[in-house]
Image 1 (cartoon, rainbow, N blue to C red):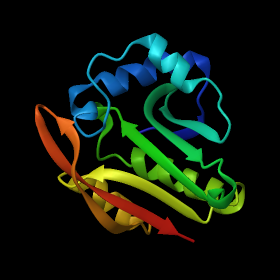
Image 2 (cartoon, one colour):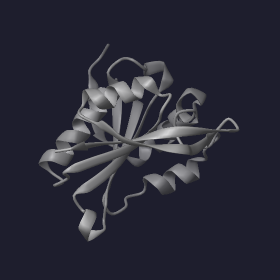
Image 3 (cartoon, helix red, strand yellow):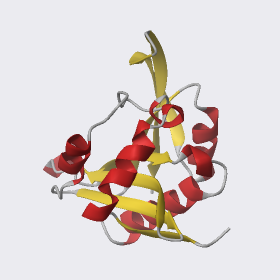
Image 4 (tube, rainbow, N blue to C red):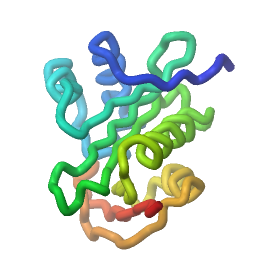
Length: 162
């Protein structure tokens, strides 16, 4: 496998990001709804205060996306949360780990973030394992947190505190 390159997302990446999020294997484990429009993703990916968009590329092909948002409220400006997805064809190849390592480096060394938060469905065991590998701990469970395929699913609230 070629080297995984992590970089900031650019407008040329928006459709690739949309296509990844449109994969049933991907949106199944997110709070996204099926069939996202390019316009929605263009708006979501447009530069916003405190938001950094990263992509993972192999041979210039976008295979993963991570969005981190540093809280803009003064009393929580040391906190960020993130969402991540990887193209289903590239699962289990270190893409998520590469994105998370880059995000942690940014938070620890450049953004003054002391606490990184995330929410993950309780049955997404591979994701929970990756998060734990990078120091995230389960802090609680949200009952019936999100609707998926007509049923409510619980979610873990996880965080890594520096």
